[in-house]
Image (cartoon, rainbow, N blue to C red; front, top):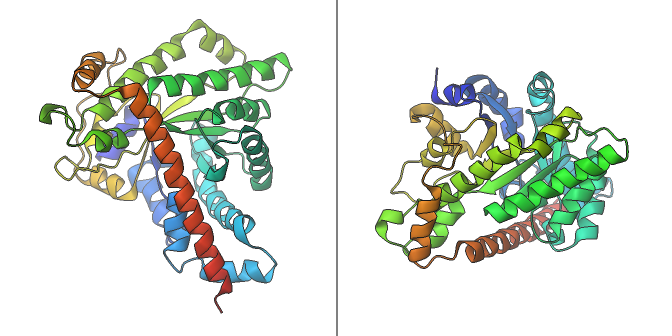
Length: 357
């Protein structure tokens, strides 16, 4: 049993944080499902910018769509949905076997809408209807404007992957939005079974404080925050409110660990995968990290439901001058800006490729 299969046996789903047309056409993604227990994947504007803008794999398809009068965002979403629906078909067995808990792919709304609640709601509904794919999440950022959009999307029956979450407070806001949406569906006599995941970005914490804290605290903030969030997540799963919703037919919103590739070459390339092993969660990992983990990853148990030493560690970071709440807001804002930059680059690349003969 390789490490990825062992991780799945612990009760954690392994998803790939990547999609390209070559991954699909070469059979590589199918092999990852078979060999490494991959049961879903995530995408974002940066991933699609690398796949479409930085390779020639989509050039012919772009030209064909241009000849049909397509351009800009509409052209991009057609390309993305084509890829994601093909991937979703590979994960359909996992989706059906888990009764909709596993086997998902994700498509993000335009990051230009991160501060636009009404625009996000409209776009989430539009993309969901356009894709016509039962195991495709629409990704909505957990920003101040995104939180009410999450509730409305869930109410409308749109499965949501809440992205760009960093702190416990941001996670709780997203989880509450999901619960409110489900409760409103129940009150309206609608099917409460609408899936959602809450994506916690991990490694960016450690990159943000690198060189600013004592050496003993290096590469420990991301895991400490994750442990704190995991404790809250498990408490919510066991709460009377969550149990009542599940008795009504609702699914629990699952916790997803994102940004789990290491950014510090001084630590193991499987560090975050090993540290975040936890039942009832998902780890979406870059392709390079997946291959490294399958080759030499080691597991030494699962995360502590009570958060372990998270609070002690967070106190040490506070003593070292790290304002975790302020940093969480900063990281979320920087993440949203990074996706906007990737989006602009992607659309510029599509425009350039559209002009090519």
